[in-house]
Amino acid sequence: MLAALRKELLLQWRSRGQMMAVFVFGATSLLLFSFGIGPDASALRTYSAGFLWLGLLLSSTLTLAESFHAEMENRALEGLLLLPSDARALYYGKAIANWLQLALLGIALVPVMVILYDAGTTKVLQLIGIILLGTAGLSAPGTLYAGMTAQIKAKQMLLPLLLFPLIVPALLASVKATSLVILGDPMGQSKAWITLLAAFDLIYWSLCGLLFGRVVEE
Amino acid sequence: MSGVVQGGWEFVIAAYTITALGFLIYGASLVMRLRELKEDD
Amino acid sequence: MKAKLPWIFLALGTLLLVGGSYMGLFVAPAERYMGDVQRIMYVHVPTAWNWMLAVLFAFGCAIAFLFTNNLKWDSRMEAGIEVGVLLGFLLCCQGAIWAKPTWGVWWDWDPRLTSVAVLLVASLGILALRGFVDEPPRRAVWSAVATIIASVDLPIVYFSVKWWNSLHQPQSTPETVASAFHVPLRVNAFGVLFLMIGFIMLRTRVAALRLKREVDVPQMHQEAGELA
Image (cartoon, rainbow over all chains, first blue to last red; front, top):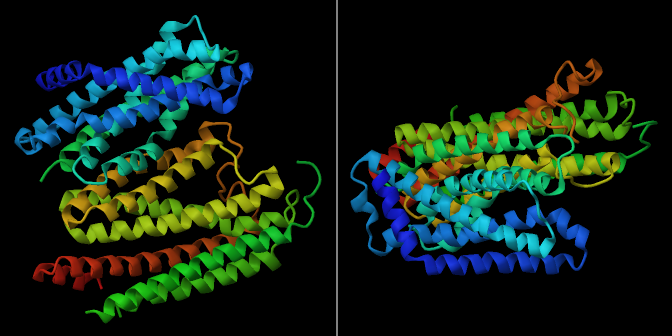
């Protein structure tokens, strides 16, 4: 599996120009959200967490769809999957790579969020932690469905359609947790939401890994 | 909630009607689909 | 006899539902605080219970298919999902109609309603997915996988009122509901249950017949024949 992961990270490093484009896409989304609200500074700050995660979600449709591009181009999928453990290695390799990509994007968007919405915080480590957990929750089902939809023609339409409902709970938890970090947490609710997020991650990462093999078999 | 919610029968009727219609229309759609499939056999 | 079974369920279900609703509307007393609007519960709660059953059924069929690779489970799962969408949609309508006079709003994004909406949209997505895949075996595998992942939301729906301070009422059980209201509730619950079973059976037949048309192979005929 480490080999699969190394290969994925190498592929991503090679296409780092694309990462820049995705970052611009994400930053632009955050900008557009602020236009949607208008010059209401306190409202912007209140909803900043929501905007951040929405921006991440939208960007994820781009990165996730791309993640199977290489295999699809060269019809390499069948060749890689001679053993069941191959499928799992492939899945986790891609899921981890997607996760890192999204997490990096999330962290990169934080300064944008701070500037646009005046949504700074001193609890940087906690924020990074939430971004890591939340993007993990996006990446696991996202990679599974990306692998599925990459094989059919209507992929662009289907990936968001399938993915979005499923990640709503994880998204909500991420937004809540982030919001508490930015706006303050007088009643100590963060722990509950972070635990929930961790639980989702656990369930999805194990379930999707288990099921991925069936999704890419011939 | 203090006091009693007065009336509201319109809501009750609406809810029951939508439910009944939902079941009826779905049932009818099933019958139509089955008929169409059996014809071609 | 076997071919008539779904119709028997439908007839029984309709009878029970009409009877239960009559009792709920005209015989049961008005609730102390909610007044007559509470009578919506006599359809809403049974719909909720049976919706969750439909989702659970689809989940079971998905697992059964992945283990057996027998397409008859795929047909049953498709039926379960579609009937689930019907019940889920009715559930949201009934709930909204109840919510307007009591909560003041048609909808609220509290945990229970949100998780129900999630499952409903996810189910629609699975049906859409099926529309895009032509080969039956692949379609079956993919929608089974998607169904299993979507079903993760069901425990959330069920426990949402317990885990969070939800706007929605806690579970209706015999302990939380006064006995005067039990009978119509139970009758309607069975009414919707039988209707649901009848619908699922017929819808499975539709799916099996369509499959037969798609894959005109002798063994498919045999399996579809077993179902119909």
